[in-house]
Length: 184
Image (tube, rainbow, N blue to C red; front, side, top):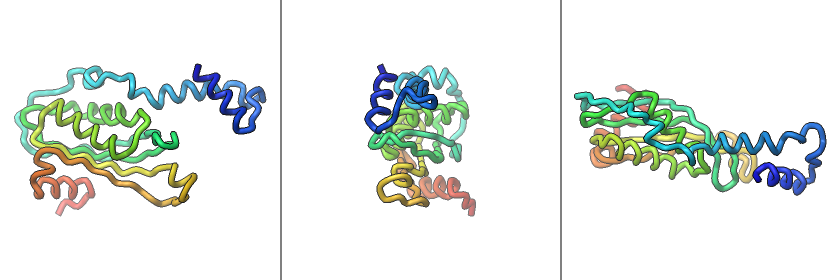
């Protein structure tokens, strides 16, 4: 049982799990971890819930600044940031909130940022079969801030480009320019 493992961890680090402030900690930590890793039990089809619509649109669609929180699989410490998604539809578009929900499915797992970025892009590519997809993730990792090198202002940026976003420089550059706020 997860609660027992948390209680044993408290003992191993030199704490008394019976002291007032820690009595319910094993239960709270277990509940918290289940919430923070719920992406393992979520079904993509249920998350999308049919919110894919036929639309005669071949212009770039971008959703910026989708906040996310995840746990690093190496240290189980949080990393968090923003995800930017762009795609060029070929007759099908997502309901806008579904992209944010899709990000959460992959963020709410033990992750590395590189894989999470690829998973989000690949899933969009498979679900609506657009001309192309671009995903950029910017995150701060507490495993770098709280321990190890202790670099407080570091930020990691990853990207995954599929279809026309990978093959066509102009498409990729338009997406990156819009994500970065340069509309020139």
